[in-house]
Image (tube, rainbow, N blue to C red; front, side, top):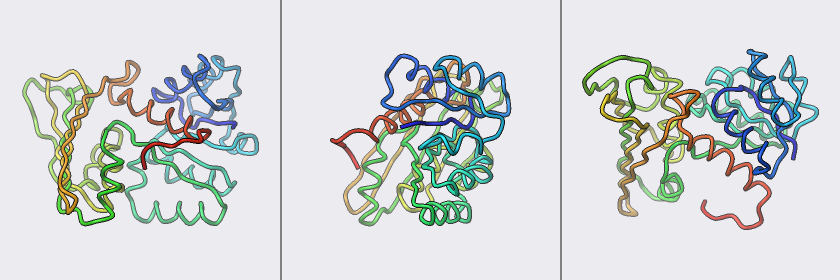
Length: 254
C-alpha cells in the first residue's frame, strides 16, 4: 500500500520515523504541506516525493493521512474522497460538525472508499463503541494539560472550559480531538471539562462512561510530542497501529 501525508507536523514526523526504521507495513511516499521545507525534511527520510498540490499525489496513492487541521478536514478531505482514495483523519474535531461529517460519508460511499478515525490519545474507545449498542446514560471527559499545551500561562489550576464537546472543539480545535472521538464513538454529545494545570507535565484524559452495560473509568496520561506540546505521542501511535492493521489477518478489538 502506498500512502501520502497531508500535513507534515508532529504526528507526520513520528509516522515517518517509523517508516524510515522499517516498522510500517505500508510505504510512505508522498508529502504535502504548505510549508515546503517541512515536507521536504520528511520526504528525505524515506526517499519520498514532495508535491506542490495535494491532487498531484492522488493518482499514485491508496490512502492519505490527514494530519493538518480541522479546516483541512472540511476543505481537503473531500478532494481525496472524490478520487476514490481512503483517508485517515487525525484532526477528528473536524468530523464533529454533522454537516461536514455527512458530506464526507456521502462522498466515501459514492466513491467506494473509507474514512478512518484512529483512537488517538485516549484508551477505552472499544468499550465505548460496544456500550453504544445499548443505552449510555452518561459520558464525561476531563482533560488536564500543562498550560503551555493549551497556549496560556498560569501559575494555578484553571478551568478553561466546561460544557458540551461541540463547543470544546470550536474553542480548542488543536487540543481536544479526544472529545470529538469519544462523542462519535458514544453516538452522543459528551460533557467535557478542560483544565490548565501547571502541576502536571503530561496531557491527561479522565473518562467515565455509565450505561446499561455497567460503568467504566479510565485515565490516560500521555507524553507530549517534543515537536508540539499540543500533540500526544499516543495519537501518532494509534495511526501507526491502524496503518499496520490494514494488512493484518487477525484483528483484535472492535
